[in-house]
Every structure is written in C-alpha cells, then in structure tokens.
Length: 300
View 1 (cartoon, rainbow, N blue to C red):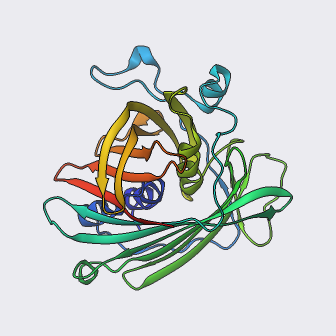
View 2: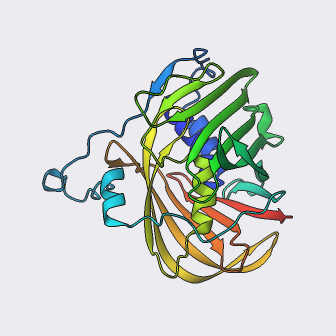
C-alpha cells in the first residue's frame, strides 16, 4: 500500500470518509498491502516544523507542536462527553458525480474495560466497498482501538486489512517512554504522551464542548506515521439532513499536518449534532475531482 493510501485509510476512520479512501485508491492504485515485521519498535516522531518567517506566500502556518499545544492549554484535558457501550453508527459514502453508495462504514463502541492497568474504551470500525465498485477494488477492513477513558489517548491500535485479496494484520502498542521495552505480543510504537489514534480522535472530537472551545490540536498516529490534526469550529447551528434524520449540528473544519505542512489535496468538514448524543452525522470531503458525502444512515 502506498504511503498516501495508508494515510487516507486512517483518515477515513478518523473522519468517517470512506470516499476519501476510494479517491486515493483511484489516484494511486500502486501495489497491495505490505506486511509488517512481527515485533519491531516503531518510532513516530513529529517532523520538524517550518518557521513562520520562512513560510511561502499563501501557505498556511504549520500546526503547533504537541508541546506548544499543551503549554497554551488549547486542548482540554478531558472531553465532557461520555461514550455509550454498545453504540453502533452506520454510514454510507457517496460521490456526487456517481450518485450512488460506494462504501459503507460502521463505527462501534464495543465496551469499556481494563486494558493493561488503564480504564479504556474498545472502539471498532468496519469499512466495505459496495457493488459495483468492488469489481474495481475489493475492500473489507477492520480497525480496533483501545483508548483511555477520559482523554482517549491511544493504548493500542490494530489494523486488520483485506484489500484486493491481500491481507495484513498490524497490532501496535503505544509506548511513550524510551525506556519501555517492546511488548512480546505487539509492535511498540513510540509516540509522544497523549497521542490518539484515528478512532480515539473521532470520539474525542465528539466530547469537545465546541461552544467554549472553538479550536483544538491533537497528535495522531495512524499505525504508520505521526501527524498533527487541527480542528476548528466554523458554525454552531448548521441544518443537516441525512438518512438518519434532520439535525442541527456544529460545523468543524479538519486540518491534517505532516512535518508541519498541511495536506492540500482535500478539505474535510465534520458535522456533530448539537444534542446530547453529539453524533457525527455528516462528513464532506472536498476533493480535486468531486465532493464526497459520508452520511449517518443509522444510529443505535
């Protein structure tokens, strides 16, 4: 799997945008999934940031580093939202020019449990392409996250991928101390403390009180590389109509940075319902060739 494809696999889960994954697979078909070593130690540092004085004209300023975000206090220590065990959210992804569902995605809050001494949520996501697009590329992926209750920092992130007949299983334990050894049963990913995986980040965004916190930054490790994500409130009362119903939602722009430079191939907008459930009801991905919509179809 190419680097950009791997990134969007993670952002798909983070942003509920199966259409974004399909976009990259169409543009960058490349080879199949590459198998990982059994128990390597993966270091996932943040890349060097471009200084504001050296920014090119018209280039957005790089996202703040993890240290800067924490010093400024821009990221709340804990979201004020509690997940519900057993919650299941189903989504349909379509591209406006195709006018049909190209993929389905399910996000599940499986359970709350003790995970290696930490009270954690087990989160899952399942993505499947739909006919007739399966004839172009067959995709049946599962993602598992074990994220700390409260701040939803990642403890372990798993990718069980089946794409075009090729399969790979990756289990990575998040390790923030250089002295901690790699676990025997998983890959160790050395990341800054507080790093979230894509599934944990999605649930974290649901927990933000957007009426009081108009912007947050978060470090994210997608199972392959380290990124900074910046989420900015654009609107507090947007009317949204999706198959699951009509909602009033907060409109949030998602910016993804790698090594201090923002991804420019696509723009993402996430809509979270303003009711107590704070459901991710819609994602719009503005791509170079079309606009993709990932809509909530069922919530239970």
